[in-house]
Image (cartoon, rainbow, N blue to C red; front, side, top):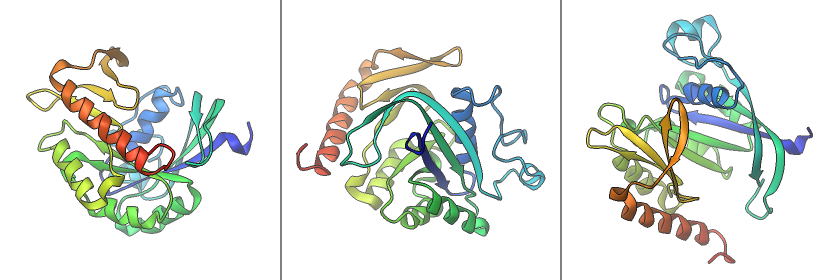
Length: 234
């Protein structure tokens, strides 16, 4: 493995948005750990300090090495995607509490790109907006967490993000919610595929008929946003 096979990705967001839990799931799904830890249980990989376990918050910047196989990834929009047999993702789990903003700043300086994590019920949080500005021109994406939590509204959260950040916001993966706002499946808009969880694993399934029109509209929006950033695609 060379330096070209390594990516540094910062997880940023407001305190309590679920960054450490996201890193924990990434490790577990890629076999980086053999059990799925929880912040409430004090057994996550990234929050290992006694004070972090006691307070159930991240205090210092933590690193989670995620190994992912058979991916196609590019460093910039102008670079053609390159196939790698194995890529190491150094996930930088940064504290969201403003008291430890210096740790998040260190993550931004070291990372090539970032994932801004936000809970669906919080909409556009102060922490997400602050970290968006902190990233400057570095690439970023937004992970809307816990869309089925009580008092959550995924669509309202998405609208708030679009209102603030404009056409830069275009969903790539969207949840399918039932009448009680429980996630029954997720739709990968990029590849037009849907998945549901069975036995703890994602299983491909047909796109639900009741959201088919919405999915097509979101796919068109995604393609339009992508084309707007590239004259050749336009």
